[in-house]
Length: 308
Image 1 (cartoon, rainbow, N blue to C red):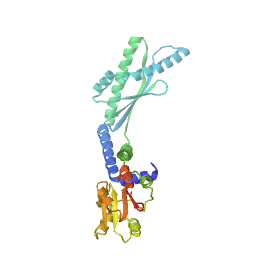
Image 2: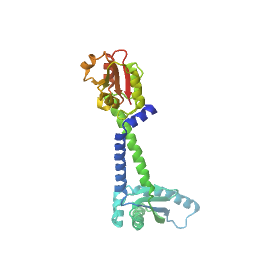
Image 3: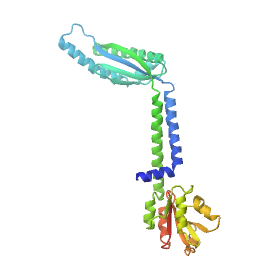
Image 4: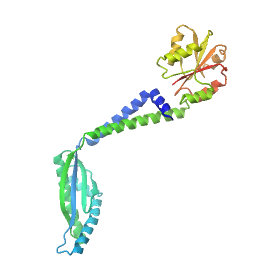
């Protein structure tokens, strides 16, 4: 699909694309509201893991630092234990989930959401308390001396820009889903997707193209009027009803021309080829197979009109 065809598709199906985009926006806003209404603060517990060994030599200090650094990864894995999380939540009185990241050398940062700065502090204290208990049990079982050397709890209010980012992404994804869905639907139904397809089947360049069949177009009317002879004309709409073509509705008032629809009015079409013949095809509505079938019975001097 070219850029021109994409723009034509969006223009032609703007309303359903807008509806799908609005639905996507509603889903994005609802998701943000229900997941963030009780979590407006981000809490962070910074933890430094150390080792208790008295009167260490230089080599022992180096080994101790390396051992503590490796043990930090062990402590990080403990936060995948649902039992530990349940105990932290029971102590704090808040139901929280945690993201744990290993920082440079023996450091961990535990990130979570909270309702307020006060609740973030309570949750942070519970994290340190339960992690200390786990370390004590580990030391007892493995005859080691690891501990929490430093810890701090901080909290910050979530940026209000997040909702705007979510809404922007929701709108973009909704519009993209709308365009792709409509394109795939039209492709699967076998309708004409662009004017080039119609002109190739008809082996004829369109007399004129109308950007929207529901709106007047002076260029469209002017071109048709210049081609109409004194004979009565017949308009053949390929899957396009007369009510969708504004030009014919205006001419119909004076009874000057006749409008029929292919394929349902095939017999009437066959009996009227002594008249000036105009074929009306609409992108996104006229089926390619019907255009091919009509081409087989058309006189050579017909004129092609395309509604984009």
